[in-house]
Structures are given as C-alpha cells and as structure tokens.
Image 1 (cartoon, rainbow over the protein chains, first blue to last red):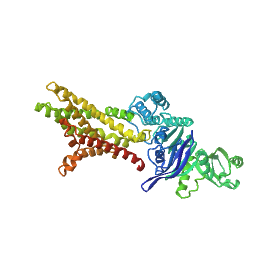
Image 2: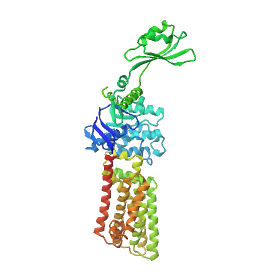
Image 3: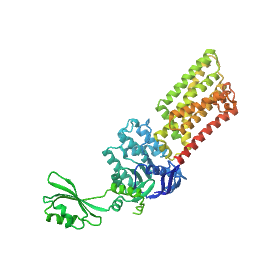
Image 4: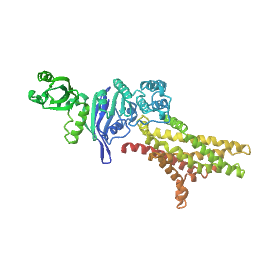
Length: 321
Length: 227
C-alpha cells in the first residue's frame, strides 16, 4: 500500500511536482504516464526516498519514507531510469550485493539470488561482467536488483526502454506476474504497454495529476465521436448520398481509393449511436457491397493526447472523470 | 556498513586502482628507502616514512578517494545506495574504511624494509610503531578530505585536484602566515617519526578526520532535499 499525500517538489522557483495525491492498493499495478519532464521520475524518486519532497507525505505500508526510512525502504524494490549498474561486477555479484544492501538474511541469500536470477532469465550470463552485457540483459540485471528480497512494492521507471520486441513481451509478462503478489508502479512512454499491463493509470502533466482511472474508462471518457471504417465496392458511387439515407451520420469521408475497385470510407456519428447495424441494412439496398466494416476504437493514445491538450488549454475539468 | 566496506574494497582490486595505489606507494617508499636509509647507511626509519607520507600520499590519496562518491553520482548508482535501507552514515563509513584498509595494506607491506634493516642493525620497534600510527593518522585524515571532495562533485578529476590542492596549499601558505600550519597535515606528522606521541597532533588529525566524515554525511543528506 502506497499513500502519496499532497506531495510537492520544488527546485528553487520551479515546481516539478505540484501537490499530488494518490493511493496504490496492495497487489495493484499502476501506470504512470506523462510527457517528458512531467514529473514522473521525480515522483518515483520521492516514493523511493531518493529525494525528499518539499511538502507532503509518502507512506509505504504504514511507514513514512522520511521518518522511518529504514523500514519503508526495506519494502521497496526500485529499478531507476537509465539502469545504473556497477559495470566492474558480474551480474551475479551485482544481484548478491543488492541482496546484501537490502538486508536479505544471510541464510536465504544464496537461494534468493538464484530465484531472482532465474525469474528474470539471467542464468546464462550470470557470471559475465555487466560491462559486457547487451542492453536487454543490463535491463534485466537492474530488474533483478529491484526484485531481490521479494519487496512488497516494486517501482519500475521505464522498464522496457531500449529492449527488442521479444524482450519487451517477456518483461511485460513478468511484470503482470509480479502484480499478483506485489504492488507495482511503472512509468512508461508506451501507452499500449500501460493499457495492457496496468489496472489503473495516473496521467501526469507539468507536475499535476490530470486523470486517474482505468485505461478503459479513460478511453471511454475522452471519446466524443463514433468512427466506423468501411471498405466497399460502390460502382454507382452511392456512398456520397449516404448521409441523406441515414440521418444520424455526421460525415462520410473518403480515406483511400484502392486500385481493386474498392474504396475506404470513414463514417462518423455521435458517440451515443452505433450505426453498424444500420449500415449493414442500408448499404446492400444501395447496391454497395461491404468488404469490411469496423468500429474504430479510441486508444489510450487518443485519450492521453486529448487530456494533455485539454490541460494545456487550461480547462482543468477532466480531473473528475 | 560492512556490506559497503566489502564491496568497496573488492572494487579497489577489481579495477587497477588498488594495485596502482599500492604499486606507486611502494615505488616512492623504495626510492626514499634508498635516498634516506641506504645512502646514509642509517637504520633510522623516520625520515623514510616522513618523505613517503609527504609525497606518496599526495599521489595515492586522490587516486583512492576521487571515485568514492563522484563515480556513484555520475553513473546513477548512488540511487541504488540511497534507496536501500542502509543509512547514509553506514555508506560513508563503509567507503572510508575501505580506503583506510588499502593504506593499512601498504603499511604492512612497508615492513619488508624494516625486516631487511634489522639484519644490519637493531630497528627501534617502538619508534617504528609510533611512526606507523602517525602515518596512518595522517593518511586517514587525507582520505576524509579526499572523500569530502569526492562528495561535492560528480567529476573525478575535479575531486582529485581539490584533494591535492587542500593537501599541498598549506605547505606554501605557511610562508604567508604561520597560522596555516594548523591545517597542514604534514606539520602534525613531524613529531611521530622521532618516536614522540604528540597528543595535540593526534587530536588534531583525528578531529580533521571526524569533521570531514561528518561534512560528507551532512552534504549527502542535504542533497536529498535540494536535488
């Protein structure tokens, strides 16, 4: 359980994090989302006790990170941005050192190091110097450092940056697995990643939280129009007059004229109506053959960009969605 | 504290730094052994330790201390240290003791020459012990200064130049005012080689050491709030 209460961080006159509050429940995976310089890393650094907030309180499992740092930090595993590692050590030595730093008891230390190395898939390279490991493996070593000692809270700052697609899938499924036993906070630029892994998303911009919700709700809430992508064979060009046949349609836009005689259109209507059924009924009567008909889903990307833009315009009324 | 101590000591010898430091020390020591003891046919070891402390420490202390905190800060590994349940005090002391241990190793190695001399005459054991204790006190004071320098910058070169500056400047500043002799570590080492234990000098050296260690701890803690 992480409680962040009215936390502010100022650097001189610059406010990096501005009075943010949120809770993360046990076993929850929360995604931290925001453009560069939004205050994601600063917030994570405050939660892990690396930097002190100017104002406010952060409580990890009932222990205030500023007042009882030793107890609070024992419960946290942190994988910082830019994966800092000791390059002169081997992967195994590093994980062992992290175990000692984290005060893992001596009698279970070896077994704990073995467990974590296996969990992140480092067995083959465990005796290589970190200096000689590839980026993907370095990332895993850093992740191993965060997992050692089985902490309740795991904080990952951009865990998949610089990995190849296969590694990204592996790390993602590992994080999902972690979410069953641990509380996880992760930050990312990749929005699809957040919507795949996280149960809740915190969108932060210019040090302020602009939305906290599930990825699905965020997508729904920011959706204004229903878009339907449709590919048709339309020899008589009846699509142009479609708007007159179905009153609810707001616009019909030609997207692409394919060479095989088919055309792709985007049909837009208000978000409260679903035109798919109607289109299936009406189009054949107009001698239009449907090749493909698909509702275009708003993605977290759209929601994100919209929220950030709304915040920019100063309409800060999205907080309560 | 011991976790950090063990890792730091290991790192000295995983990188060439530990070997270079000990090698340079032994080289200087051997040169002075020739210049002071052999060329004068003397069995007096005091000058030997004094000369080695004056010039040898100047070379090896910056080498041992420059990376202590600068490197951690530059590589971001200080994030690992400072987010671990270990206290800043134990981190600083662990690093300090590791560097002090390297000096201790060199001192043990330096006994070889005393053994050689003892074949040709009797070496005063008590004087030798007092000299070595004094040498060690000067060395740890210098380490603490170097450690503090390393904690104020993330650039290792700057850290080592500050260390050398602080160690050397008093040698010349004394000519401006004798008051500067109080910050000259070598001035406090003057009496030890003749077998005299000076309480005042011992207290000054230990105080400088404690002061610099405390300053380092305060600085690192303070940086958490301003960073």
